[in-house]
Amino acid sequence: MASDLDTLLEMGFDKLKVELAVQKSGGLQGALEWLEVNQDKSYEEIVATSDDAANLNDDPNAEPAPLQPGEQARSLVCNECGKRFRSQAQAEFHASKTQHVDFAESQEEIAPLTEEEKKARLQELRQKLAEKRAGVSEQDKIDKKRNEEIRRKSTKETQDIKEDLKKKEQLKEAAAKRKEKQDDIEAKARIKAKIAADKEERRLKAEKEKAEREGRAAPAAAEASTAATTSGPVESKPASTYTEARLRLQTSTGNLQKTFPVTTTLFEIAAAVTQETGMEVQSFTQNFPKKTFDAIDFGATLKELGLVPSASLIVR
Image 1 (cartoon, rainbow, N blue to C red):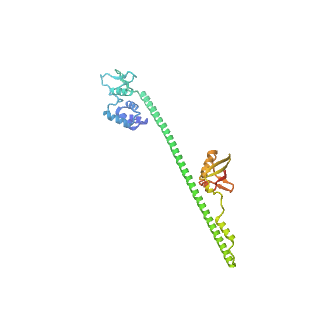
Image 2: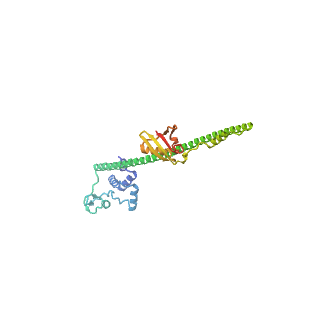
Image 3: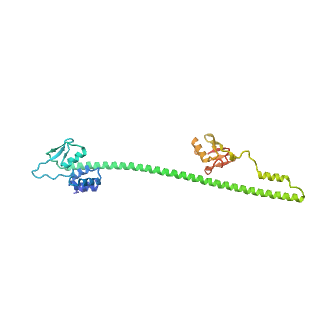
């Protein structure tokens, strides 16, 4: 036959609390009552309360000593709720819990629980324990869901930051490539100009020597040609003097006429088009001269791309 300790442990009660309940009550009935009263307290709280009381034998749920022959059975009854108690300590504990103050002595002896009553009390405690565990389990699910939402939000924010940094790095690399390409073009142009200048200088020198041998002056056309070559074409107004650029943007929903500072990047132009039309911009195409500006060029300004003072672009 299972002991009281084993019976209570099979119900799922904490071992430390069960041992203390059996120790303080001395029987299954008292242990059940003690566990029911202290079900919401932790083991540490119970031990601290017992230490403050400084007397482990003054437990309000302990089984009273059996009556001696000739003794009259006595008990206490709460006139406010009708509950009976075996000892003064139990009545005081009831008063501290319920604030009931009207108690009276009774000549009735509180009979021990029958087997059926014990089974009913065990079933009741099992049900209360199951409900308590279900409540804890539900709270665990809520906490787990909340923690998962926090984790997902944190992960999304981290991914957004990484994407933003990646986009900035791509724009930075694209700008560096464009600068390198432009520097290469300018270097080639300087080399070509130097070669042309050297060639022209040799031609003029040859003509001058020939004229001296023939005893005539050097042709004036040669000097005029030299001046024209070095001076180059004259523009009425250089593009560098403009501060704004007029753009005609052809979209799938219609045309947009916009004026932007020459320092505006194509990335900013794309953002403005997206904000106004809702379309995601992948590239801009210029017909004359034919050229396509994709994501690599989005970090460049209108001035750097030669779209000043005006340009017509097809948005794709």
